[in-house]
Image 1: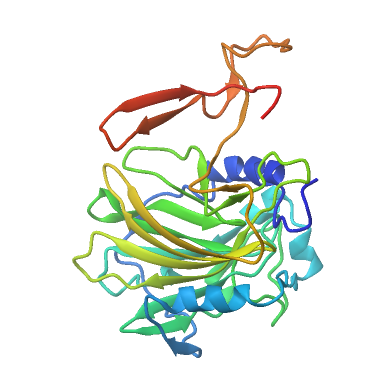
Image 2: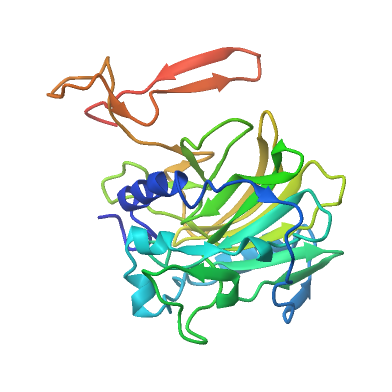
Length: 321
């Protein structure tokens, strides 16, 4: 078991994420002519590029306070299949009738995604908080809608764009769970996940899992090829301000800018960490008695460095880190 700072256990999260990638997180194409209903616009504030850094700096000066788990018990105890029965209504996607080349759909809280994540939409220098409403979602036969006022905020989001067809939106990036995010390019399926920050990975005292408390998504212009997402990270050891500039297409490229504000000395910090699953491969079978040639989601790391060199680093499972 990881330390109490972990928002989700890695094993549980990655297992659920793998199942979700084939179902809820990889839907059919989305049509352009869907009707729109605007999210709650009752909470607005001025927003500029440096505001998230200011919030992270101020938060780092305070004692860490974990997010409050205020979900009704029936949502906290959802099984994977029950959680999969909660789906965002396609006609309620953010910007669906505004003629912009991106759409945003939100994820419900529940299952292993219990912590509240505040969502803001930014336009013309103003950030508008997206208020939760059960009307954003459909609830299948295995799960009941929450009671009025029983849920606040969301657990994450996904962004859709015109990747494969000119008349249908497809999902290409997801932010959900701790500081996990992942993206795909044209013709791809999801593989490994990235994280905003890794702390104490492999350390005897256990790994610490920072998490994103809030996101600000900038409304793109009608001709835009990029979308910008800001995020506020928090953990016992540090806070952080992030800016993701995302360009989907034949190759989906993400420029990530990060500023950390540590509360303590960071002794084992991993920047730009990637997370996948690996049990063994063809060249790593010591102590393995299995008829299969390999059991893993990834078998190596492909690197294209600043010198134009293409490197390959095969994965293995050493006895010591």
